[in-house]
Amino acid sequence: MSFYMTVASPSEQSVLDLIEAALYSDFDADYEVVDGNEDDWREIVLRLEDDEGEHEIAIIRRARVDAPDGAELVEALREDAAEGEPASAVRWIHDFLTRVKVLYSFELHTGGREEALEVVRAVWWCILHNTGGIGQVDLEGFTNPEGDHILWQFTGRARASQPWQMALLDDDGRWTTFEMDLANAAHEQAFRAGRVPVGVRPRPSR
Image (cartoon, rainbow, N blue to C red; front, side):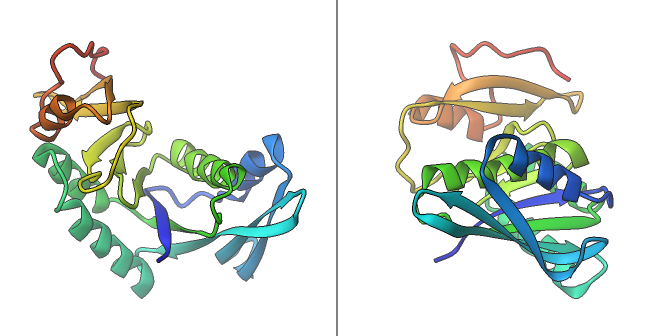
């Protein structure tokens, strides 16, 4: 079963420089355009070199929403978001998706290698952070453009106790951010209901 991460962006800017910055700064990794060209690519392969040789660790597919594959992916994200909580985030994501122009879908082939996952997440984060997009990760949920987790989709999956950066919309439509424990059932229940968990210190809305 394939595992996917996606960035849905309202920007049409080139992202190859962002991919290069993420790959070449901290990793012995590279990419290859396998469909299209550097000015108009549709598919890129990410590769990582380690002691065992070179490995393909992900395929990134770029799709415009005015093309059939892009329109299909937007609709899939819309349907996926509808199954999450809180309801306020579902409405916000649905509205945001009406402004999306380009989608970047990451199909992971990390093979359980921790460094490979770090590489893919670095590229995903760099595109997300610099194009004003929102993120989606299978079995986790959605993020806002700042990378804060806004939609809960961890249901049915065992979670270790760890801090996680979250955000909820306030009454003025601004994000209230905070850190909570993914394994804390009370934290989960509050977040899914659209409330900051008791005992958690929220940061100022933005």
